[in-house]
Structure formats: structure tokens, C-alpha cells
Amino acid sequence: MKLSDLTDREIWLSFKEGDDRAVSYIYSEYFPILYRYGMKFRVDASLVEDTIQDLFADLIKNRETLGDTDNILFYLLKSFRRKLLRKMNKENRYDLTGEMTDDYPFEVVWS
Image (cartoon, rainbow, N blue to C red):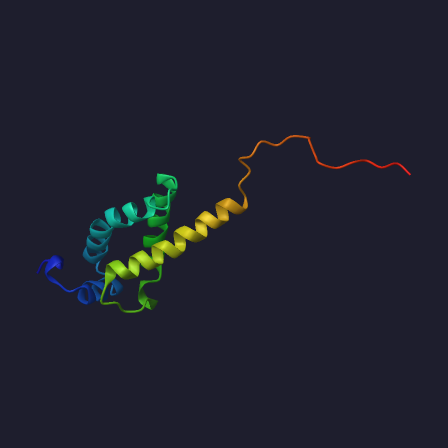
């Protein structure tokens, strides 16, 4: 039976049970959707791709403890969005792209 003939719930259960075909199917089916969604955040394409890769690596690593879902797309979008926003916040926290100078707005007062 082809995976495309199964429901999302059945595909997800196969994925959680370690079926490599389910992993490949989910990745190939949803990667383009996740990529387009990530690019709407106006971030670098490599950040979007890295985040998708990290998401799938985490899903595979933790597949036995994942919850069930009837909607794989919703599950992935929600997880991906959360992971992408965390990465964006982390990068902004350490953003040193501004020009650094020795011009500091202070006045020296001698006493």
C-alpha cells in the first residue's frame, strides 16, 4: 500500500514506529511547504533550511515520545515556527552587525 493512500494518523503512527518510508514521505511531502512558510519570516534561506533539518532530526530522535496527530502539516508547522522563532531570537540577541566605533556619548568631569 502507498503511504499517500493512508490517513495522516496512520502515516504518523508508522513514523513513530520507525518506518523509514514514513520518514521519507513526510520529509518530501512537507519540506517545500515548511520552506515557503519559513521564508515568509524574511530570514536567510540557509536559516530556514537548517531549522527544517534540525526539526526533522529532533522528530526522528524523539519519535517514540511524540504525541499522536491527525494533521501532520499542522503539527510540523507549529513545531517549525516555534523552532525558527527561537533561532531568530537567539541570532538577534548576539547581532553585532552594527558598526562599532569609539564615539561614546559621555562627558569626562574632573574634580
